[in-house]
Each structure stands twice: as C-alpha cells, then as structure tokens.
Amino acid sequence: MNVKKKYGAVVISATLTLVLAGSYAYAATQHYADSTTDKDWAGWVQKWESQVSTDYEKIALTPGADETRMNFAWYTKEDGVATPKIELSTSSNMSGAKTYEGGTSQAIDGYRSNKVTATELKENTTYYYRYYKNGVPSQTASFKTHNFNSYTMLYVGDPQIGASKGQTTSIGDKLENASALNTAARNDSFSWNKTLNTAMAANPDISFVLSAGDQINKNVEGRSAGNEVEYSGFLSADLMKSLPVATTIGNHDSTNESYSYHFNNPNDTQLGKTTAGGDYYYKYGPALYVILNTNNYNCAEHEQVMRQAVSAYPNTSWRIVMIHQDIYGSGLDHSDSDGIVLRTQLTPLMDKYDVDVVLQGHDHTYSRSYLLKSDSKTHAKYDFYDWDNVKDEAGNVFPYNNNVYQDENNCYTIANTMSGSVTNADGTLYMEANSSTGSKFYELIPTKQDYIAARNQNWNPTYSVINVNQNTFSINTYEIAGGKIQNIDEPFTLKKTSTSRR
Ligand SMILES: [Fe+2]
Image (cartoon, rainbow, N blue to C red):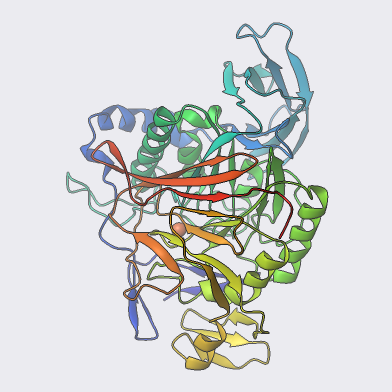
C-alpha cells in the first residue's frame, strides 16, 4: 500500500486491490469499457500513435467569469515566445475578426502555457476562432452559444483517462500507462470521445460541460510530464475544440502542475489550493457555479470562496457547487470513508450559502440523494491520517469503522424525500456521477445509506443532462449500453416559484 500525504491530500497509488480496516475490499472492479471491440478502433490506434499521443498542444475551452466570456488555454513549444492571441469572428472566413491577447507562463519543460479570455459574447451565436502556436495560426474551429437564460449542460464524472490500466482487452492485451504509448489512455480516450459525441448528438444545444474531477489517471508529482499523454487523450475528443468544460481537481489531478497549465479557470481565487490549482467560480445566466478543490481539506478557505462567489453574484436563482470527493455518494470505495471527512465541515456551508445542488465524482457509481441539511450541531474536524484511519484536531486516531467517528458523521438531516420534483426546496441535492468513460468502475456500498434516493451501477459509461432556467433545474442521467442510450434514473426537477433565497 502506498499512501502519501501532501497539502492535506491523500494519494492512493492505483493498485487494484486495497483493503480498508479489514471491513471491505476496496478495489477497482474487473468491469471497464473495452474500446478494442469497436468498429472504429483500428483507425483510432493509428491516429493515437501518429498524432494524439505526442501532441501536447491541444486547446481547452472553459466557461469564462460569466456567460459573455470564453476562456482558452493551450501549450506551445518554448522556442519563439509570443503574446498569445485568439482571433474570433462570426464568419467562417474569419472576416472582421477581433483579436484577444492574453498571458503566457512556463509550463512543463519545453512548453509554455498560453491563456486568453474572449469577451462580449452574444447568445445564440456561432463563433469561429483561431489560436497561434509559435506564430502559426491554427485551423479555424468554432463554438456556439445558446440561450443564456435557459440552457442545457452536460455533467460527467471521472473520465480518468488511463485508469483502465491493468485490464485485459478483447484481444488479450494488458493495458498499461507506463510507456509513452500508454495503451490504457488510448483505450479510455476513445470512450471519452464517444461519450461526448453520443451526448451531443442527443442534445445538440449543450452550452458547456461540468467534469467533476479526475480528468486523468496518473497522479505524478510536481512538474512531472508523466501524465501529459493522458491530457492529450482528454483534449483529443472531437468536441473539446468547441465545447467549454468546467473541470474540478480530482485526487488524480491534484499533485501535479499540468492541470493548472491546461485549464484557464475564471475567478481563480488562489484559495483551496493543491499543486494543481484551487477554487474558482463563474456565473452563467441564472446560475452561480462554485468549483471547490476538496483535495485540500481546509474548509475555512472553501468558505471564503463561497462567500466571495455569492457576494460577486448574489442574485442568481441557482447556486451549484462542484467537488470531486463525494460527501453524499453511495460507492463502496469512498462514500462512507474518506468522503465523510469533508461531510461534517461542508454540509453546514451548503446550508449557510443556500446551495441548491452539489455535483460530485470520485466514487465511479451513480447516486442521487434526498434533499439534505445540516443537523446544526457542532462536529469534530477530521483529517486523513492514512488510508485506514482519520484523526481529529486533538490528534486522536479513529479507524473508519469506529463508532465515535461514524456517529459524528451522521451530521445531516433528511429535509425532503419527494420524488419527481420538489418546489421551493429546503435542503441540498447531492448528485454522484458514475464514470463517463468506463475507464474504472466501483461497486455500490452493500448497505444503501438512508440519504440516498436512487443509485445505479450497470458498469456502463454514463452522463447527466441538466436543464436550467430561472425557475427550474432538472437532471436526467443516461447510460451508454451497446451504442444505445437509456435512462438509469427517473428525471428529477427542482422548481422555484420565487428566487428569493431561503
Ligand atoms: Fe476517479
């Protein structure tokens, strides 16, 4: 067992079997999405070897500070440093293009990170853009804006490109992520592309994607470039040039700087930081999005960010928080163990800042909670001690199966158990997204927790489609099985007849 502690984060090496306190076997399962059986596989193998795996210079789009802005980030080779720029036009021939300039910084060895923000975007418009790599313009790409006040977004969990390592393919190959070729990343990038294309084909009006962490798998440290091929795979999906993605930092992203060079996050607060970056927020139409890096357990810093975000945008109908470590999920591996270390401290903050929905990842299973509130009692703060134990502020060590610890973490009340839709809800909805690529799946925890309304594990890649307007937030979750999509839960809708805060 290889456990490291850094900036309050626990990094678990991706061994396939871990045993926790003798109570459960914690492990990735044998289930995964094997891309080698797909009819398009041979073409992808060629493309991966000739282009994708060696090209670190792909662009990433991220929602800007509000719906009128778009953020861009991309690597260029270190020679010939120039001011980064994006050209943006509403014509495909780039006539009348406006140029936006940004900043550049040293990225991994041999590369610079370029970041630019485009402003004054209008709704329901197709924008064409070019970016420059060492003085050479890119091919023209495009993105579309839709209605700013009533829109659709995609919510996905743990793409974790490279996490299928150790699995055996249909043709008997063992997947790995130790070589530059990284056959596990090759397999998982194929599924990632497929999931995005499938979701977009069914919902062509998606405005942006929310990815709840673990974009990549290889949790290398510091400035190591060891995960760059996985970022290449993540950014290689066809739609990544035209679909902004708001990502949060997962435990696999957290210990390495590459995340901070690849994504141009808006309103970067410099709080809640680990090596990869920290907390940020943005407003899009009637909703505020607060993205917290829960690999950092300093919830006082997360609270500062929530306060900043709410005071910057006090009047949105909806407040949505996204975190990686699920504090109310139903996966075997984390939901009743490391997830609840944060639960005691974050639940009251969701009440205090009137958060409607928390989007989570980390447990590679699907679940939807009832609407939950804090129990209003004071609870001890816990921190990780090692994989088997936590410790409180006084330094007392508790195994996860210790009753004192478990009792402390019953820190919630179930405010509403209605199905279908809830109007003017008192309480917070917690969603847990399954793997969007099928690179790794976990078991559901054997005993369903009382806070869980619905859960699912069919060992298929899943995604959720969220529709938001001034008065409704609705979520539908689908699996992709044998190329077909089907619901894995009933739709769930929050409604507000008044947008005044509770
Ligand atoms: Fe993960």
